[in-house]
Image (cartoon, helix red, strand yellow):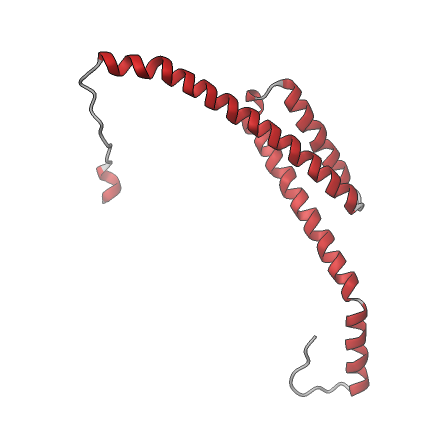
Length: 142
């Protein structure tokens, strides 16, 4: 805490305020950490809900159930004030969401590679008039 300029407060009041601020510094730090933990958990909740809405149809049911259960646990933890429970539920949801993301990316990468291998190799061999071109929209330049 810094006190600058002239003050109409007596020196005893200033000393008392400084002492109280120092006494409550640990409590303030803990409250800030708790608020940050809650904010990070709420952000993960939102991101996971969005992820499920956009990609839920691409996931196997077991993965959706695992993420849904972890998401439900985090919602319950956020409804209370137990920060350790929030941290634990956050970690569980984070792991479940990472597994689900890995499933989607590994499945999408494998199917895209298989599709390209099936159509890509055969189509260029039979068509020698392939032209590499760039589309330019003249209206965007104006």
